[in-house]
Amino acid sequence: MSPTINLELQPRARRRAAPPRPLTLRLLQRVLADVEAEEGVVVARRLAAALDYGRLTELARRGPREPENDAQQLDPRYLLLWGMSGPEVLTLQESLVSLGYPAPRTGRYDDATLLQYWAYLIEVGRAGARRED
Image (tube, rainbow, N blue to C red):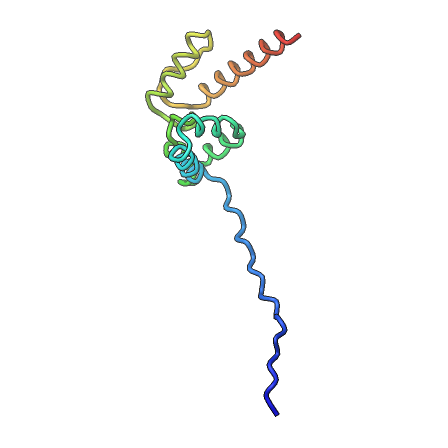
């Protein structure tokens, strides 16, 4: 008698997908740099502009305790966040002052700069809403 071969397919053990990595500013920098390499800086900036700025600010505020969320590792060409410093931040502060918002001219994106920037955004939003009426 010849041996019998079982040809039934056995289900393979399913591989579980790796859990999504939590968003960090270090990861965001890598993603934005990859987008820029493939699509250009304008697309990377648009992607950054579409993100939840409040959530990114929360991450940046953790930067002193969590190095992966240090805002200094973000390229300021994409966006400016709390905790960053440099000439781009100073330009933002000078622009806010020229528009009548009393931002400090320190070159460091701190709470005072953040509050004045938010005040500016709120006013721009209100002006846009008034034009639509």
